[in-house]
Image 1 (cartoon, rainbow over the protein chains, first blue to last red):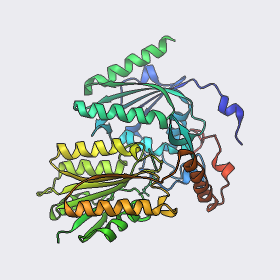
Image 2 (image 1 turned 45 degrees about the horizontal axis):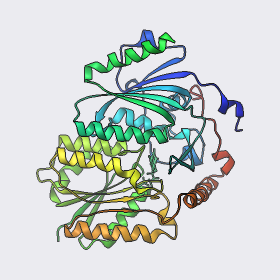
Image 3 (image 1 turned 90 degrees about the horizontal axis):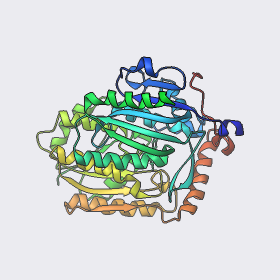
Image 4 (image 1 turned 90 degrees about the vertical axis):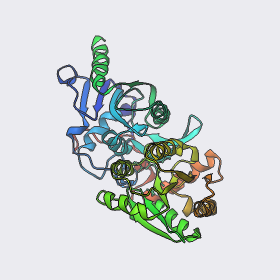
Length: 184
Length: 205
Ligand SMILES: Cc1cc2nc3c(=O)[nH]c(=O)nc-3n(C[C@H](O)[C@H](O)[C@H](O)COP(=O)(O)O)c2cc1C
């Protein structure tokens, strides 16, 4: 059941996951780059049932669009998340998906970076770029930096960048990252 | 005596640890309490109710290192529909991991919300190992800290508290493995099945 091949598989997928439509579709869809616009999907809030750990391990019991997204998160070795910032954290659309992504972890705990965290299933170690936009204060930026630092332990980030952008600059920031990807 | 309103921000409020913590808070609180769960549909009602109270206690779990999205949505409603008189907001947060400090960011977010929206923050209790502690001999640790929280909130002599199981990380790891293995067993799922590494395929709907 625990396939060595699966675990050792070469991960090369890149994922752009955004809480609002980005004008990127021509550049970014298909191939090894996946583009997920969460605002166009139907994703309910996690109900905290732990079914994905204890009843149907690796599989959420709510069968909506989130079940197509968390496998992509797991497989990608580079992710770009685009979210509005709210009270120093991700706003609702992105936060809803991040909560629904816990099937990628096991219930079981390991000691990781000196703290207790969950064991990951086949989750590729990943480089993350988080692009946030909205109106925010320096304090909110500071909270967000701390949040992503903590996410890194729980989401298997090997490294991360945070880009704080004005609302109308988020698209440009993502374009730049994608054009870098295209170079290689 | 002025009543305290307890709002449960757990997505599984009726069956939540937060509900049990809220119950303990009520038991220990020298002042009477009212209790309500935050649901998708009762935001406006709760926002309006808040003005009848001098103190509100938010009880909720840590979700993905931050506030659960249902609570986040409630705060967004509260920002748009503030009560005419603003209560002092105290917090009882619990997280699954051992370290109570893993709750720090969520608390920073709430303090920021309160400051930006004209609410005074009162007392805060950060509970680590909150998924299981009430089912272990260490429940006294949780109870003791909730008793302190209740006294602080009721008296207005606000304080911050933090508590968790008095275990080393290694022992916690062992104890949590037993806890989750038994959890799976209730559904007929073995430890090996729970440990599977694969995640469903994106096309497997
Ligand atoms: C979607 C989800 C995300 C969670 N994220 C975290 C986390 O980041 N850190 C943590 O320590 N516990 C986390 N937990 C565990 C809960 O905080 C813990 O089980 C808590 O006791 C639940 O409280 P409740 O029963 O009041 O909802 C998470 C649980 C769920 C379902």
